[in-house]
Image (spheres, rainbow, N blue to C red):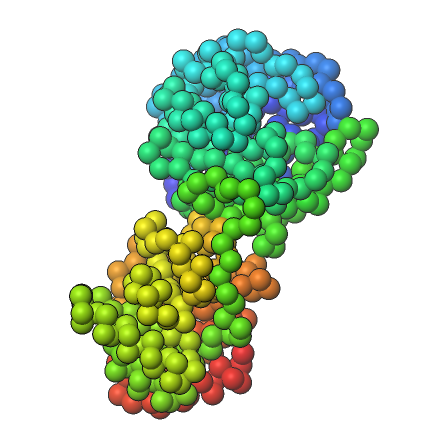
Length: 492
């Protein structure tokens, strides 16, 4: 296949004459994500905003002709499945997917949002023939119940229901929470592959204009995957995209209006918070504010370095020790905490949250892997500030679920201080994060930033830069610190 720049996503789904769902919603979503959308139309529906009046299933010969035409010339990077209308359509699509090597997102449409029943026997057929080829299934409550042939008893039963669907053959499942009662004024979706799992919690949008929600979500996931995002990132982006579309939706006809398609999400109100467990009722963690921007933020490996840089006027610094244990580690952390008090500075302790609590540190900084083992309740109750490292949409959503004192964004540039499994985010993405998060969170940028790059980083709108080797490996660290502090004061 010849190389091409623009990803291709197929939508194998039904046509909605009202324009709010199905193929029409998918193509609008693909356009917003800058992917090329191809269509295999499985049925033509006669519907408007309040009723599904008629369905004409695509003849097998016509369906096969569409698939063959696309397969011979416009092969899909990702395929999104929507309404498959009847068992013959399911069988033909499943047959094609037996040899398809790309990712398959399936929105198992068994009912239209206007209340029309599409098929009474689709559930059994889909389980037998289609689920084994689905990399991600995205059912709502009624669809999950149809697949499982049992009721799902509210949010507390969702994790078990999702595991049961994976056991039936789907590689992973995202059960959408739009039909469940809101908790904490939020709607909660749950994803699992049978091993890992997490909840995505977004602000409840109180609107009747929800036509095409499922189609738009699944097609946004497919489009984000085609753009190269990981599945966890694609889920976060897609949920934000649909939340934005619901928030801005308006009624066009006599019934519910369609989800609006207005481009890449860019407001924090639309982005979900991510957590390993379903949030309990009531407020989440409450970490203290840092009170002001962090400014120049050196990350160093010893209390000696902390003493040296605080004497230069640095007001925020992190102790990141990797090669000490026992009493030696305790003494290093204890000295760092004492220096913070002496210089009235913000001294964060990397990783060692138990020592940070015990010794009364100003704050603790945790990487993503540490979030799995740290006691967030204990850190919050001790009154420590919390900083969290993030590198992807998934990780930012996870940080958003904790409401930390600050969020570190990186790596901005390639870095030699730590082996990173992530590509550099670059200035454009950093600017995007500042636009999304900057009004609600204190941010710092990290990764490959040196004196020459600092001005460009600050021009994105971020008001703090974290540095390691640019300071600790400089011939004259004091001069570098003075130059950077002056630059931050001027630009930021």
